[in-house]
Length: 227
Image (cartoon, rainbow, N blue to C red):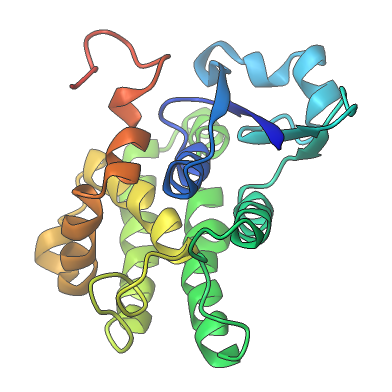
């Protein structure tokens, strides 16, 4: 058996992806909060663990390994969780290996969020936009709308209950926090993106997603916490 530690921030969409996957797989994990607003991710101690100075960071320890195997990128961690837990009998977060096209579609959807949308709308970029005199809120709303528009165009041909058919995949683990972010910045998800809205409505009721919600984390401020 392995021990999992997740360095996370309650409102980090990348961290929420891993919380969803770990919850879905039934993997117990220790959560270590890293406050991005206080720049704890930039500390020497955190950089020593994750040179990217970001969250999430997943640390996996097994046997006599006290240091642990560290994964500092969320999509790599998602696939690691899937591969390891799948070997233990849990359902996969990717279509079966024989379905190369399906796996490519799921990865495409995940990358629309994780490569195209999230990196240009995160806290680090928002701070730079403000430093240049721009509106970070308007910036995020526009780029999140563009990213979800691309996701919608791909998903509408492949979605069932979830983004690809009727099984929850890494695409959905990336999508749900992106929807939370988009709604926060005023994107009309329901009005603009019917496929995403339908999938998100199903995801919102999934126990693994509910447990991973921004407002149900140990470091969620009291004024935002929900039951």
